[in-house]
Length: 371
Image 1 (cartoon, rainbow, N blue to C red):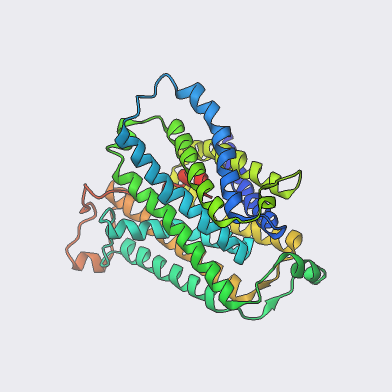
Image 2: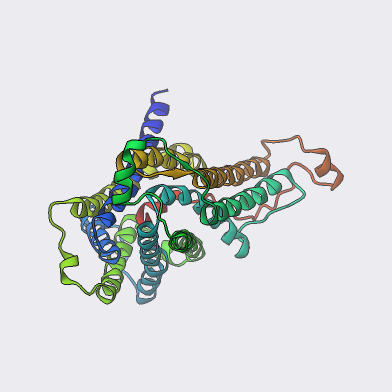
């Protein structure tokens, strides 16, 4: 009972930290911080935060790095962390904190879809788990379309915040700019999902040759810092953009680097150890709920019917995929004996699952480095 309370307390803290990330980052951008410089500072802060712990705890056990492993880590950092964060920053600049929280629900679904393309997952359409997973993908696509192209009437929940909305950005008036932001947010999630797939493909080389996970994370942050510095130098022309000062810019950088990358890394690892990755994935919509509430009350964001409807479809798609995944895993280990009449007609037995199917359990713990 005590462990159950601790798990839920950790989950609640994780979602609160992510909610703070979306709000503080959006505030920093609203106050004029360059998105590319923000990514550089954020990754530099994460590297400085993680490096001492990685050196102290895993220095002695870490094997030597070969050139091939270094190159793989560099490419994984580029594809999964740097590209994802750069797209995410620009997208958040063009849209709202609520959208960032809403589209985070697409990450497990996109990961599952890529796993299908790489033949790491299978969808058996004649089974109820397969139908659930396909339905989840369809719901997710529908949610993205609704968010991108349908606005609908505004939901003026707190009318006295309308002036703050105009100053700090609630719903962008330019539909083209909003659609661009949605597209970039999806590209960010796609990039991170691809990182998880590639890391799984390379697990026999990278993780087996270099199993020190904390050091591996710190090195990816380090490489991402170098890569994002190059991008920031290219796309920032004003030297004044590099100044932080004691304001939202510095707070958001430190919060993202230490809080999101550092604290939640261990919290999510602990929750996954206790309850599994699927349980953690099912709590992701809490970020959306918290972010929407605080975006309306703090940032003065004005929600619209289209945004709420689209976000609901995204959450529904996430749960359909996770539901199908859990049901499929239970059948694979023989915990569910009854099968439907349709499956009986197709001659399938309860335990007739491919024992070599790769169970991609949506490694949410990895998101701490990217978000």
